[in-house]
Length: 243
Length: 374
Image (cartoon, rainbow over all chains, first blue to last red; front, side):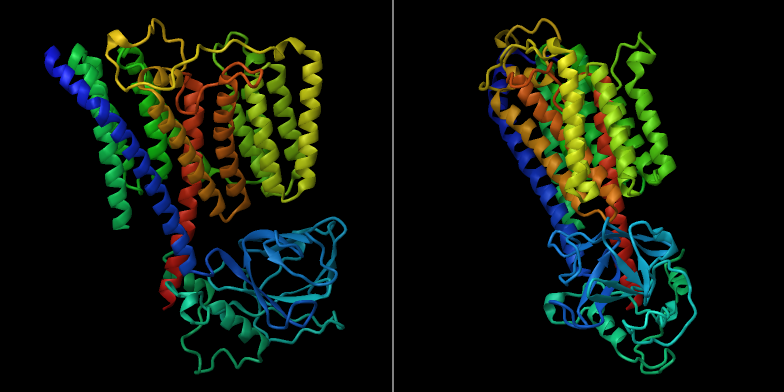
């Protein structure tokens, strides 16, 4: 194999004494910027899709504590609901414990809630405790969750693999009449998810805000021609994305 | 996208230039064919992995670049004086790359559920108990067992089975203590407490884990007081110097007994040591970023566990190097000549890559769904 003469090697060695540390520092800097730019890109993508990673939203049905009616909370796939700021869903209402319940989304079933020890809730008027099997009372589109003095309706985003339910008109929830459980809305009535590149700072109303207001109103029939675009069912969504 | 490709190209270009020059310089003096081979193979592998199409194997490029750079330093450390060791270290790293792919594939197939969690915990116990089951075994399986423990504990926590998670983690710790693998036990303990804290969302369970671990360590130290005596560490190394010292000026390195980290310090000085630390720090930061962007608690606790296992190992290395803990020295992550350790660390990197790929897949699906509606 080729061997250079001693003089040339000395020159190479002298150059490399400065070149190699320079390249090492440059490598470190470039890897650092590479990592930063990848993380920034991910954050930017998430910022442009405010509903990204959310399965739906919980809308406050009646004034309670610090919560005004129609306030909505985006619901992630998994998390903790409670009264303290460290929770994923912060519900600052009387009767809500610091960490009241855990929730997790399960495809094909809905949002499962797991109450913590000593905590109670009502799902569609049915009492739930930490001993209740969560899979027996999943929250689906339109389900009403009562925790302490807070009454919240779950509004799922479209394109989620939720069970099909019969289409019934939206019925205002009445706290004092738990027997009259409002029937969940059909998948056909779901709104489409948020548009790509929608910037919340641009003044445009996010999809979730619009849909939460819609939930509170007596909406016209789904077949109304006033709708900006036809509503899609879960199956149609799947066809469109090629599944 | 173009911007990222450009950054990746810059990183790859500088890495190739750095490692080519580093290997070619001693090769041009001695004419050693092995060094010429390394000068071509090391940058070539880096180029291949950094530009492998994402459809072939979803790898997290930033963390991979940092890990490959660390491995390259590990190959470079003995190259000038012991080329055969550099070549064998290169072969070890090449073999470890298969575990990187194995980690990626495993996590794609892994679905957290109770049976899967129980199965992986049984496998982890078998791996951890290998020294008892096969006394003739001359290499440690602790790191592999710890990774499976992490998988099972994360799976248990994701299905809200906290008590089984606690029992499995305590049992794993007990086995590690029984085989007197104190560094691995300490690394697993710290990881376990923090994963419990993050995964259960409750200080109560991490407090119980902390108390359990404290009780096990207390009991063990009472039964084995001699094991806590400070061990002799490798000789000190200069924290300053110039890179690529001529062979006649290099301190005597007759055997491959020093750790690779110490060898880097001896031959290349403080700047390269600092670079190794910074690379590991970047890797951990990237892991933390991946853990923060996950959507499932299983992936979050797993990514957190991965960076904790790597970070705690580096911390233990530093503490043991400075004789602050009564441990035998552990190797710096990715700068080790131990094959099982290298396999385990690349496996962890593969898991991190798979979690990152899952994040990107979730995000791109959201973007796709948003676009087809408008």
